[in-house]
Image (tube, rainbow, N blue to C red; front, top):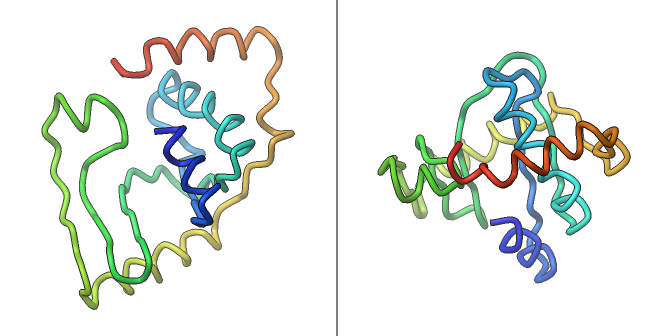
Length: 136
C-alpha cells in the first residue's frame, strides 16, 4: 500500500491521509506512525487530527468517486474480516464527503519529515512492529 500511494504521487495524484493523533491502541498508533517517514519522503501529505479520537474511513477521488465504510487499508480488513464499504459514483454525497474531509483537514496538523525522526530505541521498536503490521 505504501508503494501504491507513493507511485500515485509520482503520477501526479494529490494524496492526503488523515490519521488520529489521539489513539485507542498505543501499539497500533506506533505502527501507523512508523510508515510516516516513507510516505512523506514519497510525497504523501500526512495529517493528524487531534481534537478527539477519529475512526472514520473515507476516500474521495476526482469529485466523482467516494467510499465510506469500516475498511482499513490493511491485510486484515481487506482479506480476513470481510469489512464493508459503500462505493459512490456521481452522487451528490461525494461532494458532501469531500467538503467534510476538507473541513476536517482544516482542524489537523500536517506531519513533517523532521517530526518523524524518532529516537533510535523507538525507531527500532517501530521497525519490529512493522513486521507484525499485517496481523494487527
